[in-house]
Amino acid sequence: MTSPSTPASARRVPKHLRVLHVDAARHWRGGERQLLLLAAGLRERGAEPLVAARPGTPLLQRLKAEGIATAAFAMRSDIDLLAVRRLRRLIATWRPDLVHAHDRRGHALALAALVGRRGAVPLMVTCRLVARPRGLIRFGPRVARFIAISAAVRDALIGGGIAADRITVAYPGVSAARPESPRDWRRECGWAPGTLLAGVVGPLTNDHASARLATLMACIPRDIAERMALVILGGHASGHGGIGGVRAFRAGFVHDVPHALAGLDLLLHPGGAEGLGTAVIEAMALGVPTVAVAAGGLGEIIEDGRNGLLFAPDDDPSFAAGVSRLVADEPRRLALGAAGPERARSFGPDRMVESVLTAYRDLVERSKV
Image 1 (cartoon, rainbow, N blue to C red):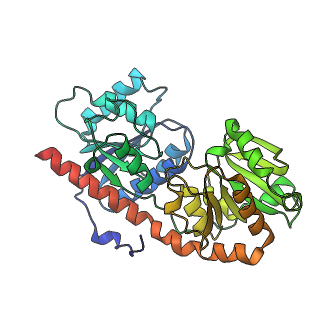
Image 2: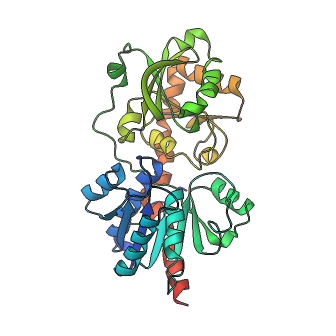
Image 3: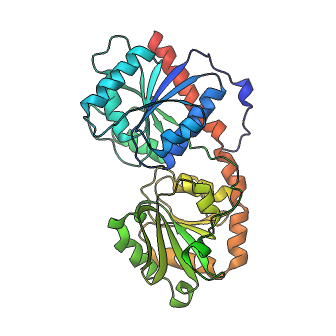
């Protein structure tokens, strides 16, 4: 993943290519950041993206700010019949060349909206989790192509019985633009200037996994724990507290992720269910090193000992020891961070857009046969 990007002007697509995107997420997460980049990249190349999303969501607001066409309507459940009817009407009137669902609910609603429709409109679904597919209808032949965000996700799909030729791997893209200023977590949380800030991302940020995170933090020596504080990015925003003897602030879901990450000294990803982990790539781009478990797609991002540290899943003592070393050893921490931007450049938005566009072209051509 080190080849340079080709200028967008050299990769135009026919202007008639219309893609209806469906995303039912409430929050601004990695998938929504990727959809915004994809829609902007498609428009730049001459395609026509239209995004169906919930009203009032951060995704819809950002799409409108970018001047990208949107359709806003509630998507209350996987079987929301009103949402299905609105999608069917939108497909009938706007006549997209294909439909691309970006989350689980959007996947279910798009499938229902296409049932019994005359004329084959290909359906593409993005999969972001390392999990075997379940559901003969949801993962059946009506889905023409799956976009896997990593090799780990692709392998899980294949392990669940989906043919390899129905899967395209398209790694997420991360913009190289740096925020004007980092978020000042120390001032915001009232911590001393010398406090080392470690952000926590991934599955363990939710409230149900707090005990697991507390167990891991309890492995960190007391003198190291007193020098650091955790910023929990994701899950429920509940403010100040303590986790396993380490000061913590639960910030919840943040909308400006680069701004939040730029204010950290270290990023921790102790859970391995991620399909890839775009926050890790964004941290790398900003020179913030990561300590993570070698599970899911994280091993496809981090080069152990070069731009971050990887440890076996469930090996809490080793993970805690790695965190402790980087808290205590500033030169080592800075060296790992300095190697991050080069690796992050391998995950540019252009590459992601081109991978998805290649799959679009293939599907449209096949649908004409």
